[in-house]
Amino acid sequence: MPKRPRPRKRGAGKLEARAASILRAAPTAADRPTRAEAEGAVRTLIRWAGDDPDREGLAETPARVARAYDEFFEGYGLDPAEVLRRTFEETEGYDELVLLRDVRFESTCEHHMVPIVGRAHIGYLPNQRVVGISKLARVVEIYARRLQMQEKMTAQIANTIDEVLKPKGVAVVLEAEHQCLTTRGAHKPGASMVTSRMLGEFRDNPTTRREFLALIGKNGVS
Ligand SMILES: [Zn+2]
Image (tube, rainbow, N blue to C red; front, side, top):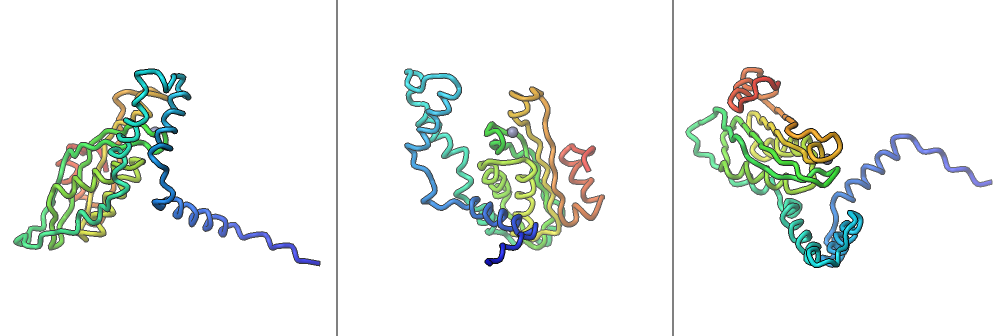
């Protein structure tokens, strides 16, 4: 009599699910739908909204939306770590806080696919190397131009700076308005969400963290 397969250990399924989700997260060029398929999907959503995709005003809309997506989601084709690779080492030993405040970003909520609009503040304590300040803004932009959760984006920005520049510390604070909160559901216009990620000295040293938070006008956050 053939043996019944043994019941799987609980952890195994989880691991498999995680492996599958990693594979799904990296679509190949072959998985990418054609532009015509993307436009067809927009036509479907127009009909789902209750309108006629063939009426005059909407005729070009699927093509426009597909082109807009190229822009909203250009971050998938770009490598934020690559942006930070070009660093400067002749800093005369500068090892104080470098701070970039109020980097406006526009992202897209991965749960509702509506805009998240906000500002990022980034600080780091250099360790021999500094990077052009525009490169930090570029890292924010690359991560913003993907489907996002604000918490995830905050961690991604901080982790990338930490891994590539290897500074003594990194601090990232994002504050943003989520249209999924302001224009639907709870309808809370004006509400903004603040997230932060502190690494190295900013995490370990309260004085350094306070200096950063004071400089970005966020003394209440810790
Ligand atoms: Zn949302």
